[in-house]
Each structure stands twice: as structure tokens, then as C-alpha cells.
Image (cartoon, rainbow, N blue to C red):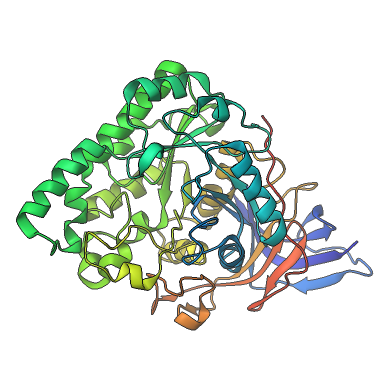
Length: 446
């Protein structure tokens, strides 16, 4: 059984930062020390002087494109990119090909991840207009939740019929995660843009087409349904300040039935970036105004928004180089989410303790993940060592995404990810991977 002793680190955990160490034995944290670590024989010792030790980030929204879309990404490559960025666990979305809308396809994803994923993992089951029986067969102890596209999807996965939605919200006992954009509003705005610009719609028109109204109409509908049926609802990628008024901060997270997520791109970019980045920051929901970005930050810091994720959604650069109508929405982010947040820490926008809360603790609590998300004795050793003073420049050569590009290319982050443990396995260190072990399927205390 392998053992590691990490000593002299600044441990950032459960609202505190303090000098100490962690003893890892096998897959788990055997002990946590404050101050000097004891002398322990026959262990690999890591002197973490000057480094932060945090629990691995848990990203509750990624698209790894497997099966069926593996020219863009695959579980193997994107899980490696996640680990290189300090994301030790991910939850992946069902809009693959075939879609994850029957239990047999869900099982295939878990089997594939067991074969190739360096990170821990779970997968959402997708709701459609007519798969209620399959949805109700989903195992709450082994599956993170149900995903409903209340906008921005295709075919049967676009669920926007009120009666169907009400039935789904009423009958499922699992957490429902929603993409909320009103399709009727978007179609009307798209038609107006087509009439005005034809095929030459500028990318800075994206937040005009997928505007505040489209988001708020859909999000408020989801909140009303969840309130009516007492459903556990998690609204993904909040992109407007107006939507933040739908959420509460007067009760603890563990008591909330309705929660919300902010994504890195909505915290980092605003609509002035379209001129330089164009399609590379075309996401659904759209990156919107600076006042929206600041409103999302305000809600994140006052706990109306509960967690930070990426909505990592790669496309090839050739696909992204199309015109407005042909360039798909989405981009790769999972390798740099912690580094992006560390930039905000170093700017004084958020404390390192709150960053860890929003990227690790709160995700584990919200999804009721067993024994992860904290640095605690007996928990799985999902741990990240960060050098807060060693810059990282994003280059094409440094990327582990299959798509080979990033909206952050050319940016110099103020920090670096040095070493990453996944379930006690030193999976990444000093730029090199150890792929001798795979991550685990997440389990849930439900």
C-alpha cells in the first residue's frame, strides 16, 4: 500500500488556511496534521513549503463528447486535462451520440470511464419527452442526477412542453440539473438577426439573440416547477444578474432545494471580449454584459450561487472558425478553472478559502458525494498542490485537450498546479502524468 506524507503545506480547507501536512495511505487520507508533521518511516515525503494544499476540484458540468463526437474530445483526453488542472472529479452531460437517455447507454459510459479516466467521474442521465420510465430507473446512489435541457438542445432532448416538464419534476426523486433558455424567445431573436444581418451576424450579437429574457423566462419556470413539486433543482451556468434574484442565501446549502452554478467563462469574460475572441467565447447561455458578470460575482460571494464549474464543451477549431450560424457554442476550460480562480484570489476578488468552498466543499455537499471534497481523515485523498507564485502561460503545446485550443491561449496565470492526487494515486506531478491507475466512479449518500 503506497504512502505519501505531504508536509509544510499551507492547507486550505473548511474555511481555514494553516500550515500543516497530510498522510496518505492507499486511497485515503490517514491523518491531517496542523503545524509540524511527525517523523514517519517508509513513506514518500513531499516538502510543500510555499505551496497551497487544497481538496481536488469537482466539476459538476462537463461535456467530454464520448460516444459519437470523439473528433472533438473523449473521456481519456479530457479527464487528463482535468487532472492537470487540479479537477479530480467530473460529472458529464448526456448530449452525446447516442444520447444517454436509456440505462444501457449510461452503463456504457461508466464502463468506458473505468477503462480510461484518470479522474473520478459520474454521468448525468438525460430526460426527454418520453423516457420517464427509464429516468425513474436511475440509481440515486451511483448517478449524479438527471439533466433536462429546457433550451439549447436538439430533438427529443429539448424538453419545453409544460405538461411534460411538470411530470418530470413531480416524479423524479433525484437532483434535476437544468439548462435554462427559452427557445421561443431565441427563435424570435434569431429570425430578427437573420433578417438584419443574413449570414454575417457579428459574434457580439450572440447575447442579443440569447438574451436576458430567454434565460430568466426559463429559469423562473424551472424554479416555479421545483417549488411546486418540492424537487431538488440545480440550475446550471447562470449568465445574467436578473436570474440571481431567483435564489436564496438565507438558509444553509444543505437545506436548499434550489441551487445554482456559475461558470468560469461568465465570471471571466464579458461582451467586450467578442471583438477579440469571436466564436472562441460563443457559449450557450451567452457571455453577456459587464453588469451581468458583476451580478454573478455578487451572487457567488453572498451564496445565492453555490458552486463554480466550467461547462467544458470542446469543438474543433475548424468548427469554431465558421460564421455565426455554423460555429457551435462551447469551449474547453477544465484544464484552467483553478488557475483562473487563483488569478481572482490574487486580485483580491475572492479568498482562497471561498474558492475551495465553491469548487470542492459545496459541490460535494450539494450532490451528497460520499467522502470527497474535503481534506478529512478517512476521506479519499483527492488533493492538489498549487504554487501561488509560479506563473503558468497558456500555450498550444501545454494543452491536453483533444481539440488543441483554449480561449485562454496567450494568458499568463499567476499560479501553477504542481501535483495532483486522485484517490491517493499521484496522477500528475511537475507536468508529467502517471496513468498506472484510473479514477473511481463517484458514489452518493442518498
